[in-house]
View 1 (spheres, rainbow, N blue to C red):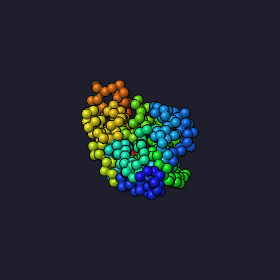
View 2: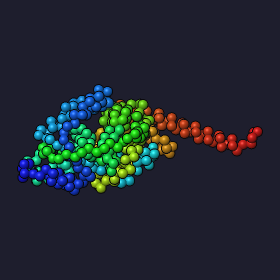
View 3: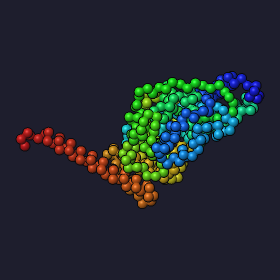
Length: 380
């Protein structure tokens, strides 16, 4: 059947039903005009908030004109898929300084692979219904303003932390898009719901949300532990704590995430080899072990070098007295073969641990003295 013979509203209804059958929690449709974001994008780049992510400097026009990415495209089908795994145990993990904290989106299978496959299946389904249909899928892998498209398509609004928020689902979901050549009816954007709340801004460990809706990536823990190829700046190492891959704090504090649903997609369930594991255990992995345990995971993209760098910082931030000696031993064993980048982080961590141990020892001594003094006669 050709496009001229198609009832576009009926097809739209079918597309949304097919999308949900494929595991997407929501499907929205919008036009491709995102020109209203030009000024904000240009200002963000001019202030250097993108750091070393030079891909943002390239292809600016493509970001602002999605039809250039897929000639003939007139609409975007925007989808979301929940990823919050069972037993996310955010607070417990963050409070255990000896445990590695990994952003919950990365504990399962690489979302790029999962969503892209489902988007292709959706496109094939539409193609079977309309022979002239043409589409290209995107999952955070090309110069697409996916949050802007999701906002236009009624998936949610852009929160002050720059992520897409939904009143019924919070923000623990992935986004994906199909750029298509059919002029389907479009959905209306939904009302913004952040109001006067600034919780995400206040909780950010490194104060990376420099103003509502503006994130300085060079301060963001997700950028520092994933995109950043260099040494982690000294001023942020304490604040990073045990976060070795990404950060969820701005989502964890968001009131809308009380409505977030646990994912039914088993690909996003946490791999036990990664979830809530000791920093020492992960740091002691060989490169072969790292590659084996992160096969099919988004974590693999940072490579073994940055993985160990991040873990060294986490080890340096351990405060559990019973674990400090294990951390020091692991760090010292790695010194002999460490790269220059890793060695610098190891040495920082060893110094930090020594200072922590000394402070704890001093506090224990002071407590002992106070307890002795309390038991002594008043005039002794």
